[in-house]
Image (cartoon, rainbow, N blue to C red; front, side):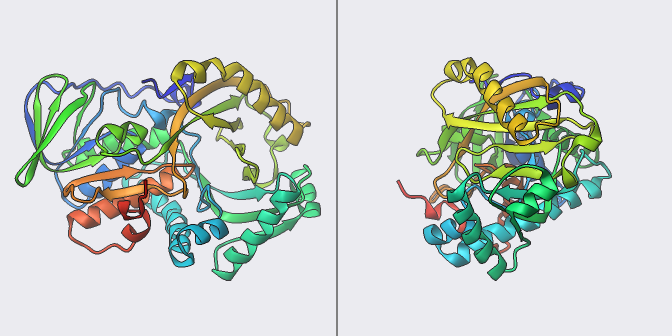
Amino acid sequence: MDLYSGLPYWVAKNSLYNYFNPLERDHSTDVLIIGSGITGALVAHELCRSGIKCTVIDKRTPSTGSSSASTALLQYEIDVPLYKMAGMIGGEKALLAYQCCLQAISDVRDVFESIGVNPDYERVPSLFYASNKKGAGIIEKEYEIRRKNGLPTTLLSAKDIKEMYGFDAPAGLLNDASAQIDAYLAATVLLDFHMTKSGLTLFTHSQIVEWNKKKSEYELLSDNGHKIKCKYVVVAAGFEAGTFLPEKVMQLTSTYALVSEPVFPELIWQGRSLLWETKEPYIYIRTTKDNRIIVGGEDEEFRDPVKRDKLLRKKTEKLEKKIQALFPHIPFKTSMAWCGTFSSTKDGLPYIGEWPGREGMFFALGYGGNGITFSMNAAQMIRNRILEKADKRYQVFGFERYQK
């Protein structure tokens, strides 16, 4: 299935990573990573730098799945507010999930500093604003629990938001701990670095169609008719990971995004903050290095790619109206628009680790709006498990919490 349609900005912005290397012979490795997007690339980075022999395989050109369509906001805030999550999984676990996302924002920066490449990673503030009076209540509850637990947050009044951002909202939460990135560029530079420096092997245009575990190793068959043997498997294929899961653990959602033509930098709001609202489904807004504005949202339950794609024009018009209502002084003109499919969970958290009873097959499934920060956590957690190091994050992100 096509993960997106339209023209994602990142594919137009960057030169296509022109790499073609189908699996044409049997292969063996320590760890096979299925998926070459930002999740697979981060997992490969953490394993390669620990001296573990890795291979990445993808049925597409590298990183041209969901990562190329990501709007790539890096926030410690999760789709489910902390106060709600605390009621769902307990306060201690909910706080740990938020703290892990907060730390991951810095860890992502450190990854790219370590290889000497910056894929447009930029620290920016983030404003979570109330869409209406109901949203103001959410903001109030969320502020109290974040403040109580030492998370970075500042409560803004309606007057503050008007003065700082120029639009009307009854309340908001501001933090200076967020960031943004080019996820497509990030994934491709990581893969390229480790192929050059760490002996990483990357196979493309090759799909795993069958797998079996034999004693202490896995044997996987590709559609090319060749086998890969490995000790560990990491499934980093987003919602397409369902092929390897015994049960469905996520819901599929269609989302829409568009990017403007460049605008004068002096017209952009204070701090170039990431913006998102309390209303569900919410819209989310960010800027780019070349002074474009990206707007995403208008999510709805996924049915099939044809119906998703037919809505693109209508959804684009709705998103245009929303951004123009917030910032009427900005001459917003859509340059590119796209739609895609992503996965979410009831508690807003990812699934990371081994399915109970399926030892050695790891899942790195960064579901929801925090895909990249979840992916950073997944890469570290899987590295630690392979190296037999304890990691308390499994109690929050593992499959043990799954319920039918």
